[in-house]
Length: 243
Image (tube, rainbow, N blue to C red):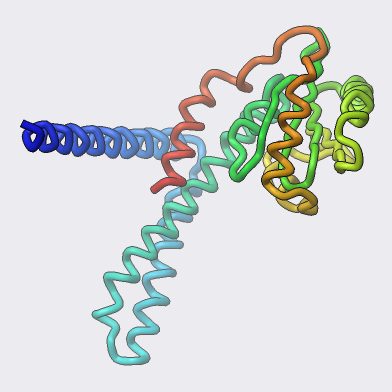
């Protein structure tokens, strides 16, 4: 009886895995069609990267006399390079659509890669300006979006509010935007990664516990994303990275 149950569970797991794989392929194909419509250079870039990688691997194999053995490897690496190009161009399109919209920073923080602990909208105004709190290796990072002068005041107030709780833990301030001293939305991940690593994971956990007692301040709730149409692109972007 137990053996039959195990076999049935294994079959269900295989079916679920095939269904998930099919869904990811469908998302990628849908994204490809969407991206191709507005990105005329997509196919040339993907095809060019594929041919260059295959050519390099084949040429290396030709030099040592095993070109036909290396050709399948070159094809796989070329396909991988084309998928990386595709993912990067989709990412650029998604961030380009999101930039400047209320909730864009919150959406970008929700898609951070790595061990970051994000608390969205710890402070806000009724004009949809907001400050989000990010905890990680650098310490505390306050990310503001909205009108520069209002966000600056929000950041200053929030920094004062948490400074007494975090002691000597570094607090960084980031304003999202394209003006001098601001960080463009598409560069937020890289900016955070370049900050110095001051805390270990256990210290970050302790810091999160300490700050969780703080309530949120401010007015209107921020939208969960910059635009409804970006949700589909975001899922595709994640699928492309997994591929």
